[in-house]
Amino acid sequence: MDGLVAYPDIALSPEEVLKEIGYGNVLPDERVVSLIRSLLVQLEKEVKPRYAYFVSEGELEDRAVRIREHLLTTNVTITRLLEHSTLFAVFAATAGREFEQIQQTHKTTGDMLVIYLLDVMGTLLVEKTGDYMETKLEAAYPDLLHTKRFSPGYCNWSLTEQRKIFSLLGQQPCGITLSEVCLMTPIKSISGVIGLGQEVRPGEYACRYCELESCYKRKN
Image 1 (cartoon, rainbow, N blue to C red):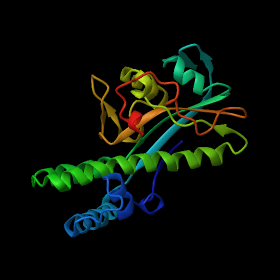
Image 2: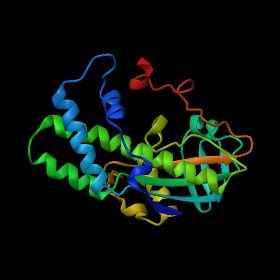
Image 3: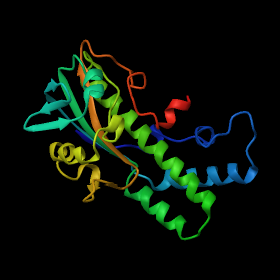
Image 4: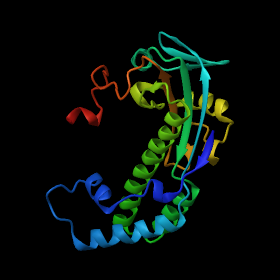
């Protein structure tokens, strides 16, 4: 399953961007607000976020997920959170090459504030694209619960595992390519796995199990 996401379905608001860059009770500078609004207008006109997913039966092992001929070597933390899954969805989602072109164009101006704001917007866009994809997955399997989505890089899951995910999805899902070191282009892209089943634990991430002391989430 793959799809193009209509921007209004995942539209960013100025408030979302301001919250993401750290504004709470402090009022932002007028230039910041004006720039955000201007950039969001451009995004609405030009971006074309995309997603793809593939659902299959599979088997959980101690530190891996076996899907067809592929063994996704994760770790015990992720397999614990995927417990009771009877189906597995491997996925990819991206803010799109159009968004990356917007970024590249603005980088030539050297305006670091604009560059920073676009980086934040790209992260928000791809995460909301992933959220939208999950609503489609829920609609396709209404009788099953699903876990959170887990991506290579999460809980020390090696980025090289993305090669297996892309093999299941068809090598260049949503137009995303992998470099030799398994970095995705467009850079504002995500990939990973979601578990589905009647007894899975929906909505749970592994922060209370994770041993990565350097994770920035620990401050929260």
